[in-house]
Length: 512
Picture 1: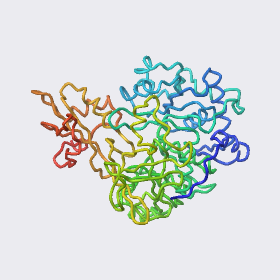
Picture 2: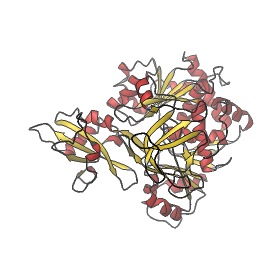
Picture 3: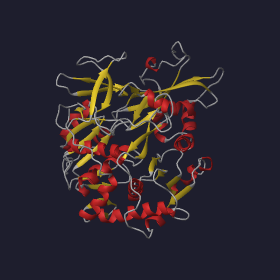
């Protein structure tokens, strides 16, 4: 096990208040030529928090955020955390059914959204039940008014360590995404594991490229607060600009998900590939075949871990163990690998990863308004990940695949059900099934199997074009394969494991 310190009762609010007094001049955030100190940003956080309270919102109220990667998004996240309002993150790529769903499932009382997304939001807001919409950069500039609210003092309302302060979306396996209840304590523990994995010290610089509707991005922000780091924020990930950004900001640590490392490797080699201050690349999902190639070319050390939305950003970490390993479990958790019958598997054999909290408050807190799914995720005290790993004789673990019906594409978990339910609405389709196939970027691409209705023909290019306005861009399939009959279980469920993953001769949107 990896020894970890106690996750105390000092909330993120408490730490922010302390930073504003003790470290007011420390540069917390750099963005587009502007530096934000802890003192600067705390004033803005307090103004927004007090402004929300003045509008009648209260601790415990759910507030949805649909904002771009910008300091304003960080300010909104931390303002909600300061007063114990419950953050409901919304992916900025959502539209149609995928955008309507979080409003239906999580019933936010208010929404803070950028005017850029106004058109798609206005299609779903009339039926959403949202009482207040605060637009950023549009109309009445309500969010900008919050940034200028008169009262910049620490808000009177404050959360406790085990209060629920966020609902993190978790991709479903046989249904829609679920909202994982996250406490203040829980949301601090994950970044503590990040700091243990990276070895980051006060003054180190993290490049913040992650979308802030993703828990990984919020975890990076929180880690910087806990350890007095500096965040170099960019609007989005860019493989061509990545190392120039690292050099410009003096970045010391970089985070990766999914195919990020592969995308960086695909950039043309340059003489200055090692001309930077980055020491550590940390994250999850580095393919073994590029681990050493990346480390050698760019002169960085790769460190992996494993985590999930239901528990922490990381529940295992590998700060100094063997290559290709996700490491060992944190001392906050017991971990086991089991077969389909629930029996422990021997060394070297793959089994499902299951975790049991050894610390009050760091267990799986459940899915919002979904007791059935909450119960289904547990076997007694053990949370069942649905992911596979194997263990070596030294006790190090190695990721071995996903048992869940989730496809991981470009660092994003995609529920196959969410794609299938939309595609199934096409009048020419009788049945469909989505699977993941290997991607040259290191994670997966989407392959859609389709059985058309009797007597109907369907052009795959036309189907993909039909999908584009109805699905987020990352859920639009790349490959389309036609099938006469699906393999079925005795209960008439499609046996996805029997569907071929090859793409030779399969229609490909990128080469159509």
